Length: 219
Image (cartoon, rainbow, N blue to C red):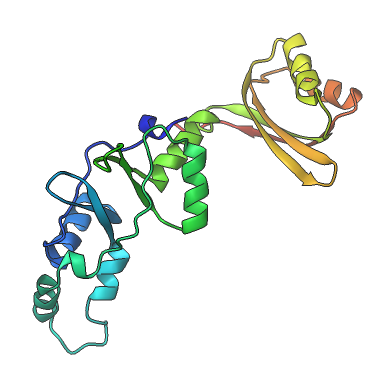
């Protein structure tokens, strides 16, 4: 799963000399939380967020009218407020990398740039989550099995062989490595239908099936 498969290509942007009022109205009209700041060559110069707009606006306790507050915001330039140290990503970066950066930085979106730092898209938290939904088929009907296993070579192959022998299709597999000392969890989503006896087969083979959940999927 790569950024280029999930990023938004048509990106709303602002330039440094636009007003914060214009930036705010653009974010509200486009229903986005942030905007890349670009120059005439579409090179990324910074980022402006709705949170930045809030910090730059008069406080709620001010005696200014709405029109006076908007006037002041209209006088303030994007370049006076924007973040200049922008974390950009490449189209060939992985969605896993984006997930890590969201976790690490708490940013909600990242500009996607080419080798010349020119903007070619944007990837946001929702795009990342859509990637995981598709990768793990979270919107499909399935049975979700959680299996505790020892950290041993070949354990996944042995488990999947049991499903193969029962002619059961595996939709997705997720491994939670070393969730406790010496053990991992294998989370498998499968089409079980009426083949629930496979759970007993797994247990007879020495695997601890700790949880079984059935999902109808999201329409």
